[in-house]
Length: 311
Image 1 (spheres, one colour):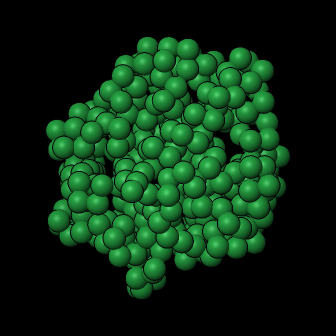
Image 2 (image 1 turned 60 degrees about the horizontal axis):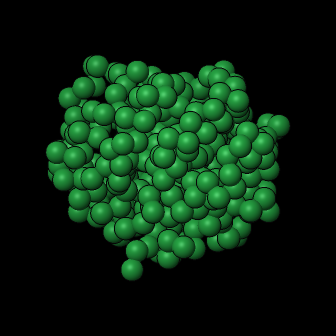
Image 3 (image 1 turned 45 degrees about the horizontal axis):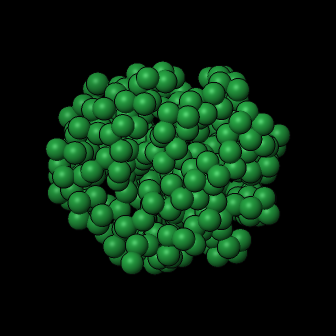
């Protein structure tokens, strides 16, 4: 039976419901917040309030995309999931190294040791505060960065992700910086026995807003996760919907996932005008008004998410 691994246990993939595939509900104070003050979300009551809003709007599940050693607060993910009945899928793996709380570990540890750490977080429980938690990760994250000085470390980490994904069979979520190459990631993992349909490729709607490029990447079978929704410094919601509609029209509805990529400036509980419920309460209606069918939206938000996360 295919299942999805959430922070409160494995569930049938059909139980996910409406699922947003790139969010951040908790992020501890640390290097991320020093780089960008929006990257700190450590208030439990605010996180709970945001999850209740999402649930009330019809939300069922989301991926919290913060890995260990990068500000993840795994214990609180499980607690808020239990209290709000929102399914949360946690990630292991790594993000951009400038966001790391323990960069020496990733620089100095062997690739085998790092891979085993990722495997253990999926199979045994996430490791946090010197303790092994009962909550397990259900996705392995990696980040394709342009930081050339860390090239050898990133290569080691990508190999560790490939090894751990092959061992656990959970999906891989890939962060892309501006002008990084999605096809490189597809080729890298495919050479190591990981099919493109195990990959969720994030942020391509803002890192490379090129319709033909998106069609090419989707043709591989990978999932393209779009999260530049109401991120107006990149482009308007109309442009975002134009891209989604184009991909649906060209036959790639089965390759799309959506999320909000939330920060403290994108959550109502922290004072923003919108939050985790925005796609459900507003953006969905915008898509329908543009001509994207409700069936296509459900395909993206429910069916695709369940297939992408199942193992």
